[in-house]
Picture (spheres, rainbow, N blue to C red):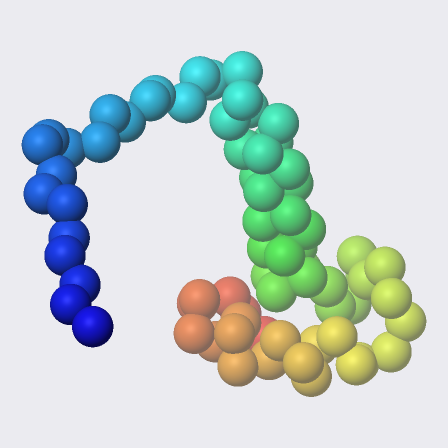
Amino acid sequence: MAQTAAPTTGAPAITPISLKAIAPWAVFFGIVMLILLYFVGAEQGATSVIAGAGVHEWVHDGRHLLGFPCH
């Protein structure tokens, strides 16, 4: 069973993606990152949205890694 590969003649054309196509995804991921930043950096104490220390314990090491004061 012999296999032959057809030689390629050139590089495939890369079509650019327009900003209109990227903008909704950029906004979505920006909002997700801001929510994540809030939970890692500020979800404790007086500004707490979720009662208790559960969120604080889940993101505790991330706070220290990113330099947020915690104790």
